[in-house]
Image (cartoon, rainbow, N blue to C red; front, side, top):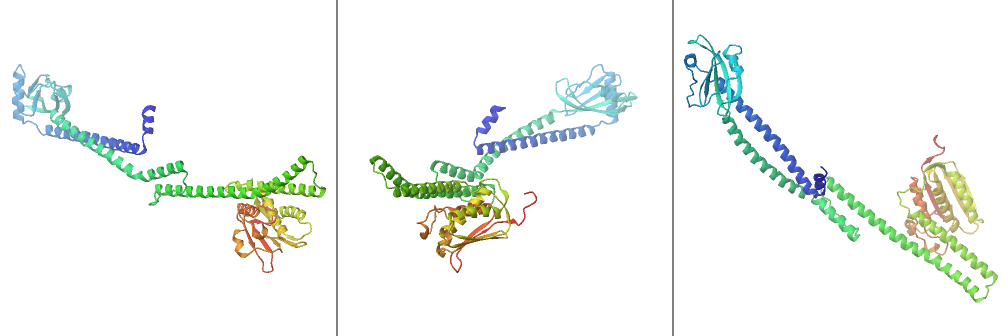
Length: 467
């Protein structure tokens, strides 16, 4: 069983479809042909039986034949005619008038003795031919008793017709199966042509990594849906690859500056040690502070890159119901350390959201760091949280209107911020985190100057019962 099944599975799909179609048609044709053959044979046998029943002899002919049979010592067997007539006496003597004697059956004797009205059966004659026999009771005036009269016809009449019909059905079935196989192969080739195009496109993409390939979509069937899905998949892969290449290029560009500066500072320290010319204490302290700041900047940049390298569909951690106001207070404490000369005015109402705590705190710290970075010395930062809307407002230089559409792009930095520390990834992380929590974030420039970051997160002023 495994051999034919393995062979079948190794065939091309169109060959399997054609073979299945031909097999199904062959089974259907075979079933119809057999049913036709059996129905026709049954009908012909019924007509033969009807013909035998209607072939009764008259009383005078029966009496003469019975008298002749009773007086004769041998059964006369004249030839001629398609019917064979047989007289069965109650004594068991049988006289046949036809082509070949037919052995009398017990039912024939029972009819002759008046035990049953008639008998209908198939018997093999002495010459070997199958005969259909109908025996009925008939009174004999000459013998003054009942005799059995058997009328028989050879079944060869039916067998010859059925053999001819069998050959005709076999020929028609063969033509039908061959035609069905050819039609199945044509239908399979035509129907699978879109699949062939899709296969060719996939093989082309696998061989060349060309994600610009698109398959023409025709209709609304399953093949069309598959083609649309393939086109959408290649488009998404192309975008993902472009974003990956862009991320690598931007990351390399951003890493080059702090690494170059760090390398220069380390080389200065190494040269000082190698030459034995010690740097002045103040220069050495400044150099070490610069190295420390650059390493901190590198660590922050690498952390941001790890955050952004994660697929958008993957959550950074399990979502929990967390108090946004409490996390915001923790982020404010960290922001105050980075801007000790700044004044923070806060108005925080309780608000509970479903988010990943560490990621949410990092996003809030990034928003507050932006406000600290761009606030003027001894400036004021206003932070309000009301009904799920968090507003962080600084009074710095603000953002030009033409720059607002780009503030959430990765590695984008305004011309005025390129001299300040940072990688240009903070607001990208903020937007990603807020979107994962089901919220929105926008940056606006108020009329009186500065920048306002507005975060809207779905939630409730009280924690849910399960929290």
